[in-house]
Image (cartoon, rainbow, N blue to C red; front, side, top):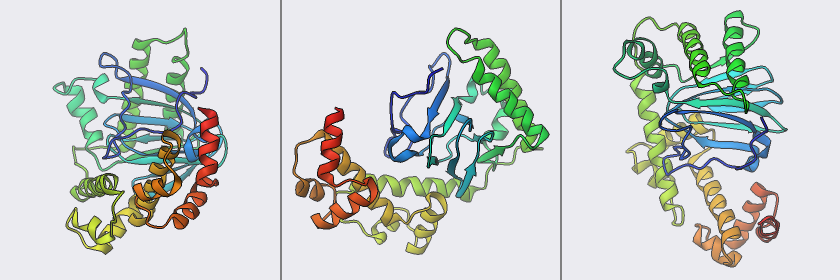
Length: 301
């Protein structure tokens, strides 16, 4: 299967939930073969989805930011990302990552014994992600099964029933690897922090054209400024004001390509009071001046 080149960025709503549908209502499963290097800024940006995800690093090195941690994943490494966990992938070179995203309901209906005994405990566990290595014999079995699933997704060899069979096998090994003895839900603080982060991000996305302070962001979740700094630094590894500036720059980049507005107008419309400062920050992120970025992308279009 050819590497996907149909899109170059993750599209999310205001809460950073990915908007694309993975598979269909009848078959909520999707296989992707992607190169992180081909995405904007060489990263698959922050997003989450209700589906679970398995990723395998086939070539290159990926940095995965997830669950408040940063992991460097080399070729031959795999990772499981649980439902509703915000994550991001970065690379400094071509990095091929075959991956599957699917709804757990594909394996069993919610009211079934299988779902309640084996699926729901994983979804509600404190396990936000798991990393797999070929060095571990049990994890090697997981990776081999994952690669087998990828193999039968090639055009002409797609077999849904075989895919489901292997997914159930994969899930059984995942369940054993997590070692769930009883249905112990994820700590409430973790769920609460995730919700608070999304509320603050949503506030930034909605109000970025206006002047926003750290105190304004903190008020949206009734926390102290130091608590807000801690949540952003721990979960997405950047302070809230840096996140705000970078989001403004991304919105400005879109306006440069989709409108004919002048640079000063775009700077003002995206929350920058000083055009010179806007131009300096824009070049830091995009390695191009605003006018150079517009010329380059208008040629592509």
